[in-house]
Length: 141
Image (cartoon, rainbow, N blue to C red; front, side):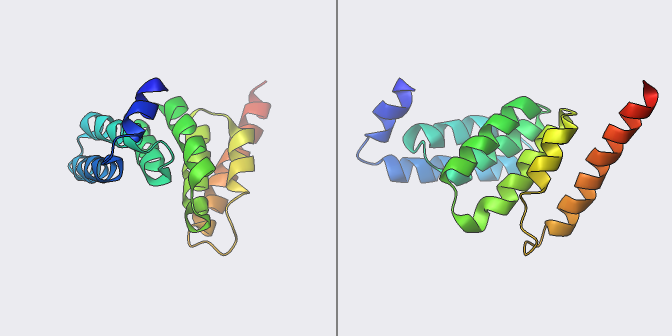
């Protein structure tokens, strides 16, 4: 964490964070997930409490089929996010748990998505998939 502290104290940390974040977004749109991941990590080195960069890093890790790393990033994003962003991050966290076949944890995470959220119905659908996976695994034993 020392590298974060040193860079976060840089007099232009906010501008450097923003530039790295913008670069990461462009790379992600191009499908260059490893490069985008590196850019978001740089952004976070300048501003470790940047919920958007944590979420973007999690999305990169998800795209790179690293659901455990994505889970960790989404959990960090939840620590710092604005309330308006919570449902989207919670949904992505639940998806990373589903990808790990941690169905009960995924269900609990999907249940945290607000019924007022535009992604509520998708969260409910995915919750049903997780529930069905639990039932199916019980039928195989």
